[in-house]
Structures are given as C-alpha cells and as structure tokens.
Length: 416
Ligand SMILES: Cc1cc2nc3c(=O)[nH]c(=O)nc-3n(C[C@H](O)[C@H](O)[C@H](O)COP(=O)(O)OP(=O)(O)OC[C@H]3O[C@@H](n4cnc5c(N)ncnc54)[C@H](O)[C@@H]3O)c2cc1C
Image 1 (cartoon, rainbow, N blue to C red):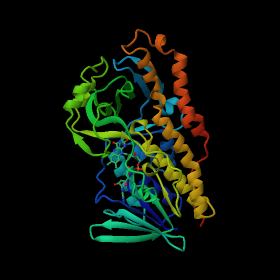
Image 2: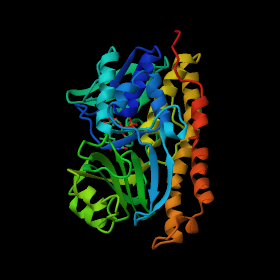
Image 3: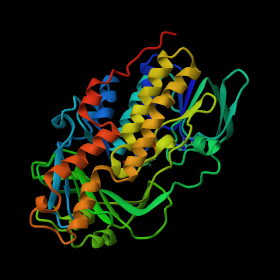
C-alpha cells in the first residue's frame, strides 16, 4: 500500500512514523517548506499522546526534550489561588504529561522519520491539487521551485495544518479560520522558577489571561525556561500566521498590574527574546473528512484553540488511529471509515468543549462573582462546585485516567 502524507508538522511526522511502525512501509511525506526549521514555542503533550509515543518506542527521546508538569493551577488576575489539580502520573494516568518546545519536538520527529522511512521527506512540495483515478488510487499535485509534479498513491493523508490545502479543495467555500476576538502573544523566557518549579499556571478571566509552564528543569541559580501565552481582547485581525514576531514591551505594558508575589507577569513577558502574535482561531467541525481515499488529520481536520493543550496531542492520536485501521481493516475504504468513525465525533465534541472554555470555566465563575478578588475562595466558589467543573470537562472530553489506562493499545502490524 503506497501512502502519501502531506505536511511534515507534528501530525504528519507522527503519522509517517506510526504507519511505518504498523508495517506500512511505503510512506512518503511531502512538505511545503524548503527546510524543517523547528519553529514555534511551547506545546503540551497530554498523557493520551505520551501513551502513543511510548508505544511507538519514541517517548524517551521526546521526554528528554521537556519536563513533566505535576500540577495545573488556576488563579485570578490578582494572583489569588482558585483551584489546582495534579497532572499526568500524579493524577492517576499511567503516562505523564510533557511540556516541550514545539520546534524541538518537530525536529526530533523529523530525525526519527529520516532514520526509519525508506523515502526522504520531499521538501519544497506544496499540495495544490488532488485527483481520484478509476483504479481507486489518488494523484496529488504539488507546486515546487522547478514547476509542478504529480505523485500517485493508494491513500493521501492531508496533515497540512490549519490552512490545509486538501481541506480547502474539499470545502472551497469555507474561508479563513473563525476568530474568537482574542489575541494571543506566545513567548519563551528565562525567569525565576515559580511555585514548585513544575506547575502550569493560568491566571485571569474571559477578557485577559496569562498561562505559563516550565519547559526545562530549573537551573542551579533557580531560574527556569518557561513558555507563556498572554491573551487579551484588543481588536486587530484574525489573520492566522504562526510566526508573526512583535516587540514584547507593549504586551508587558498590558499586564503591568499583574505582578504577583509568586510570579512577575510583566517581567516574564519583557524577558522574552521574541513574542509571536497569533489570533485565537480554530476551525468549525466538519461533516466529513474522507473523500475517496483521501482523509484529513491533525489541525487540517480539527484545529482547536492553542491554549486547550490539545493541538499536538490529538494530531498524534489521529496518526496512531489511522495507522491502526490501515494495518488491520480488510480494505482501505473500511480503514478510512473506521478512522473517521473513531476520531471525527470525538473531535467534534472536543472542539465544542474547548470553545466553551472547558476547565477554565472556574476562572470565569470566580471573576464573575468576585471581580475585585476575595478573602476566601470557598465563599465565592465552594470546593464542591470547583471539583464539579474540573470533573465535568474531563468526563465530557474523555480525559478520565481510567478511560485512557484501560483502552486497548493502538499498536498493530499489517499482515498484508
Ligand atoms: C510554524 C508553526 C508554529 C507553531 N507553533 C505552535 C506553538 O508554539 N504552540 C502550539 O501549541 N502549537 C503551535 N503550532 C501548531 C501545532 O503544531 C499544531 O496545532 C499541532 O501540532 C497539530 O499539528 P499538525 O501537524 O496538524 O499541523 P502543523 O504542525 O501546523 O503542521 C502542518 C504542516 O503542513 C505543512 N503544509 C501546510 N500547507 C501545506 C501544503 N499545501 N503542502 C504541503 N505541506 C503543507 C506546514 O508547513 C506544516 O509543516 C505551530 C504550527 C506551525 C506550522
């Protein structure tokens, strides 16, 4: 079975490695960029994704790139504690959560793909067209520096990100990703370690928020490399470019009152070498991913708000699920149907949950009831209510530890 994967991002590379591991050796990845430069800032891999990386035999390589956050804690815009909960193994999952630099993760996956795949990644190939053939194969058309080229395969997987060309060919009227009206400023800074040095924090409300988590262990001098996302409703445009760099100073100024006794937010923003501006956009859920023997994967299928910690993780789950079904189903058509049945309804529900702010709702409730802060959180949002908000999201999103711990493995080998 010949398979084309379009896009060498996290999802496309994970798909190529997963297909190869499942015994489907004839896989070629086509990437628009002329080089994989490892762009981006931090990304979180939830225990779901770390399980798949573990079963692929690459978890140690990836774990060495980042750290395991032990706790997720929510605060008000005044730095007052609202709620905290354990993460990863501490929360009862058999696999940890990992916070890593997206660029380092992408380069590590590229190295693994280079080492394992028979065919090198075809760089400088931008998908521009697709054609179904009478024998059931699909022919993909790419623009390159030397003109257009075509490649034919039994399956074409569109893992080409939030601006997916394959998705646009299937849904030509869809237009740009819808914008929530919030703007995100993402950066990496070396700052004094906060709390226990292993906590991911979120502070703020529905109008303005700050998220930060360590990407490495603290140095001997108590400083740590953190990823942060500052977020505010400020107007502007919803034009989604992952790499738009801007000056940190005006963003630090927006957060000038957010100096807590445990974290200096404006100081962290000002310490970033570079700030990347990104509108909080996602994609509407689709009624269908698979057309003929082409399908969508990762952000191309279900781009979500970046601060839901799900973009990379769900792309890896797509990759493993697709490989499992292509390796085990009786036919390609059956495999693609099973892949879509497993993944599309789950992603439709997760998209809706992420838009509804998920577990962050506890911050909105606290801000609504006590906009100027509080003396005791229990008087504002009682503990039982905070527990319920956290549990409701995990149940709705299928994130309960036992669900993951007891699910059968997606490891499989093709017997044909
Ligand atoms: C440059 C960049 C920086 C990012 N930074 C962050 C970050 O800091 N934090 C975070 O949480 N998420 C970030 N993301 C998004 C994150 O990688 C995804 O949400 C998630 O990993 C899902 O991955 P994906 O493979 O579906 O999409 P992506 O990782 O976006 O990968 C898509 C790939 O497809 C390629 N491509 C696009 N169009 C075509 C085409 N027509 N033909 C061939 N190839 C094509 C792209 O160049 C890219 O390599 C970033 C994405 C990109 C592209």
